[in-house]
Amino acid sequence: MLGAATARRLGIRTAAGRPQIWLGGRWFTVIGILEPQPLLANLDAAAFVGWPAATAYLGFDGHPTTIYCRAPDDRIAEVRRVLAATANPKAPIEVDVSRPSDALAAKQATDQTLTALLLGLGAVALLVGGIGVANTMVITVLERCAEIGLRGLLASGPY
Image (cartoon, rainbow, N blue to C red):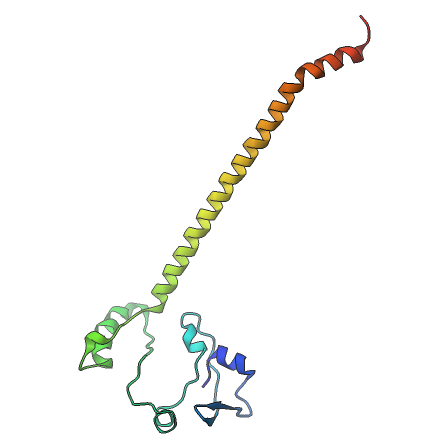
């Protein structure tokens, strides 16, 4: 199986016709392409190989470094409690259980805060610019009041 980004980079659009890729000094047949995973970009850039093939051909030692588990939102706390002990019973403290949607929520909150900050900064810049233009116009009119009045007298003709 190929991740969406990996398949795109290799120019493979579908697994129909059983395309092959060169991986770890050996040809592997592509049997499917995963849908894009917005929360787990590293899955999009991966090639998935079965356990027996990984052990036989790619030097896999039988100890996975990352395990992905999908759980309903109402079961997240329960999964967190048992996942570390299940993944590594001898040393559950060495297992880091994270939730990608938490990172996505933090990123979204940061984006919203930054957007609000930039909008506020833009509003202040517009206000300062408007006050500057209005001030310039008022000063210009005040400086030319005498000239405007004098021209008005001259244009009306002799008394």
